[in-house]
Amino acid sequence: RLFREFGEEPAARRIASLIVKMRKTSPFRETLPLARAIEKAVGRHGRRHPATQVFQALRMEVNDELGALEEGLRVLTARLQTGGRVAVISFHSLEDRMVKSFFRDHSQEWLDRPEWPEPQRNPDYDLKLITAKPVEPAPEEQRANPRSRSAKLRVAGKI
Image (cartoon, rainbow, N blue to C red; front, side, top):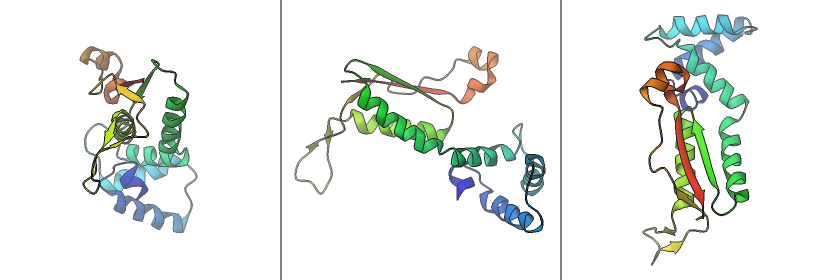
């Protein structure tokens, strides 16, 4: 589940089974044997090493990165003064999805559900979207700084 959800790894089940099987003989003490085993199990396609997504998933889980992002967004918007702006740069689709969802949920004045007789005021309404779509790095920025390729900037203002 971890590799599939956080790493968005298509071969997550195969990789997890391999890790469990290999750990029965001896624990992993270094990352290189694990990376090589993953590469052997799923092959190498493209420029990115197949273990990259797996290590990303492990890091995100160990550091509770999505939990920290969610908490940070809540605290930040609660403390932000009227007229203040919050800008978030995400580098992973899960992070971006969380920021997008948070901004959307906090920028709708009214909520409407089919089971409700009429729309209701959104108690979380406290933001106005400044960027409707994420701002992405220009091609020249991507060439100068390849790590910026996946960056997405979203901005909202406190109302």
